[in-house]
Length: 173
Image 1 (cartoon, rainbow, N blue to C red):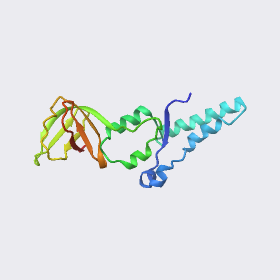
Image 2: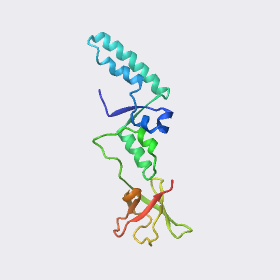
Image 3: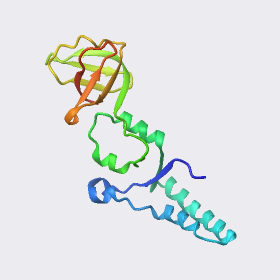
Image 4: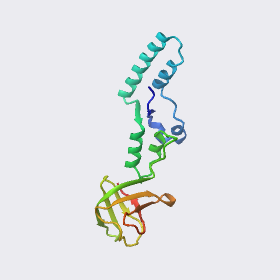
């Protein structure tokens, strides 16, 4: 019955203490479930599971334990793409066989010129990205489905389906 669900214990101090956040211990309520697997007597094991699962459910409904699946992790990574959120990233599970979200794709809903002469791009996913470089943007138009990907030194590049040079951008919201 093992599914791709990861249970994470959320502790307030984990976000503020990098060493502790990287070595998250298994929550006691989940550890009790795992300990039941070591019992050889079927009746004893079942009773153990019943008790441990009840405690785990209580911990989850009480907000002490959170269950999150791969799709939810990827969705959170897509939503937060472009923001530097190291404390949150340390709390998320690492799926060894899955790459971290390295790009997002969305439709440009609105392009606004800022006072600086640079452009702001409002995307269909609610994200707003501001142009960082000063080059004139000729290849991105409202209605285009663009891709924003990681670039060098923590920067981001907006790539247009029309081709041409990418636009250096920074996430605003």
